[in-house]
Image (cartoon, rainbow over all chains, first blue to last red; front, side, top):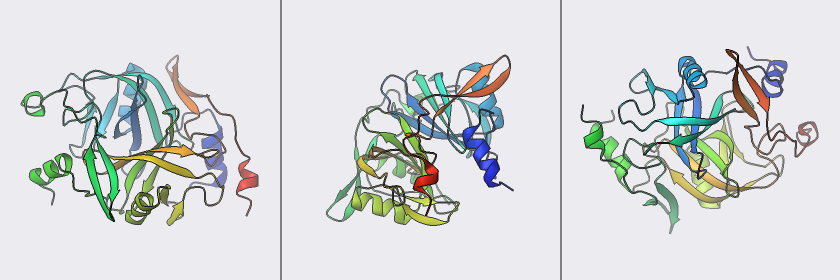
Length: 142
Length: 142
């Protein structure tokens, strides 16, 4: 069980003590080192986190495919890690990356290509920065 | 069950169809509208998301306290939402905010005040941008 002292050590200490959730995952936010834009939100298990630290390239864990995954292994659109940061609770990681091509599986640079807007009491989405850098039917054909 | 067509509609359509997880939550990343820094990663339930869209102020759902929570309601350090974006799968939201004071409960501007570094095969943390904007023992005294 997590105690108050444990929580204090985790947030104030310099020991690397990632706190994985019940599924063995933590959340990772990747931002574009050049623009500051959020590119994607994904998950890392212990192995993905370790490989990312060791290689300087982003590795994730896909919940849908239940598999470790080197970003760009199918598309060639890899992420070189410029800086990695840990949050206060050690359950989320922020990586600033140099993104080759596009981060999103839809072909867009970022997964966040739609704004959320309130319009006369209704909430709607609108496209923004939604140009495709690749055709997903071509890239993921195999 | 989610189908391939459903997934396509969710990523290519303009209908607001947030996809909450089994706990009724989605992930929210808040970045500083001025600097692009990631301030925090937190969760929103349906009500927090709705209140954020309607009010232009960030609301979250605290998993530890199991409660809806207006950011800054204890500390006064509110977040005014400048822009809200939805990701491809509609299970993550990115908000760019004007942060009053500090986002982190430890008193730092951002929760990500430590770098992760590999040092001779060991992984360690080091402080960066770790100045406190407030003393948490004062602010959360009540």
